[in-house]
Image (cartoon, rainbow over the protein chains, first blue to last red):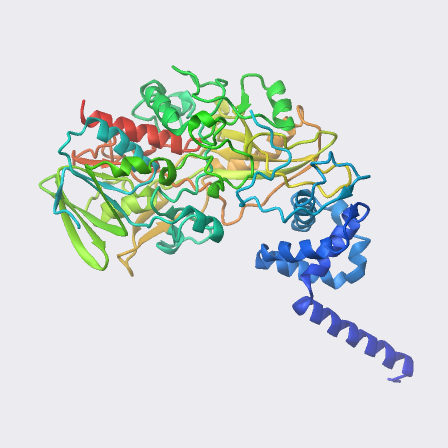
Length: 145
Length: 474
């Protein structure tokens, strides 16, 4: 078998990609995936710089190990996750869809977006992480009798 | 200090024991001495919130589970774990006579009419909110107004008039309950504002009655039966064996530990420990087309009984339909609220082969055996897709997906292991919850249910416990 320069470069690239994937798989930063999902889903809103990262940190504090592992693996996709997702082809109970729904839900509920009538033209303020266990009444949709 | 003798010993402080006590105290003389033995501890509510933990004793760690594919959820602590979500439907009147009507399960030894006055009293104490809708004859209206329904609920109520209602619940709808109004945070197992009725917060004063001695951290080992009567109760506390003489024992340690205690006491009723069951919940995630959901006032905002009763129960189980109102949004611009979660809570026919026993390798632990769902339950689970398609006649369902069951699923409603009935050959207690042979032994809780109705059990087991206490004095 001829071991050409071209084959050598391809093999090197494949090995590098495999090492990168293995590294991300094991040690990737799950917050990258959270931020990428938010940029794709609600990046068009007028949000304060840095709030996606602040949110991602709090979000991950309250996730199970399973969910963190899922996000770590998603971070493999890197910047591509900002532009694509299999969401639309997944059923409403698929774990990947539920994960994306959960990220977007908790982010929007952590802001004043719904208190302001879901108005996309208004600036969105990150109020505090949405924690239903806090003593505050935070659900913006609940109506009293 | 542990007393040596008591007029009555009550085991457990959950809903069954506490509602039994509430009624017992109304009749007991001023010199009565009631010892209450609770295995768990009392945890500060703020600490529990901080830890996201109802209680630190989980029954899953206290049993030998022979069939780990089925998990059992029950916390142990003062007030009964308080992990309940506060949903309080009554049982359907026909649930009490499924054998006569449909040839399945067993008839209860009492009727809806027998229990109705006690339902009313429990609802008063718990401050239940609800609307007088559905097949539940009532002698009095609900004490508090219903919560608001969500958009999905409104559509279902329109499609199924008289069969769909705001969920009756112990989540406060009015400050007249003495508790804050529920704000729909959706984390009812650990309500952060105390809006939900729970024993450890709202029945504490009862335990301060001078006739009661409450001992926490007291693990009951056996009921001492001599000459066909309970003579005393043996328990372990702070590493020491203790014994208290008593004239009456009421055991309400939930449907795994209660039969375990009675088996360790030497009772050998054929039904004791058998017929272990619980409802199975099936969750369906739904994408809606054009309907903004989540405007209800509480965690599960609507309850449907349209698939609960009918001749179909001869072949497959009835179910309650619950619409959840916890805002998990849809990650789609402008369609954030166009989704729903619907739960189907199925009844079952309890099977004798599902049981609680004494673990041979560790007699201090119960063994629990539940290998698979009954064919009846399997028929119910197989019907879910068709039921959702039926709901699609009322709801603009874009797509739906049934969530797979984890560990065979469940509802955290353990039942059936000390069932009541008329015949000692296939039951443990009579309609007054007294043991057929040992007449000063009362057995409390959902273990006494001879069938597995779709309704959440807390309201019914509390009503049964009040009735049992009253019957002791009449």
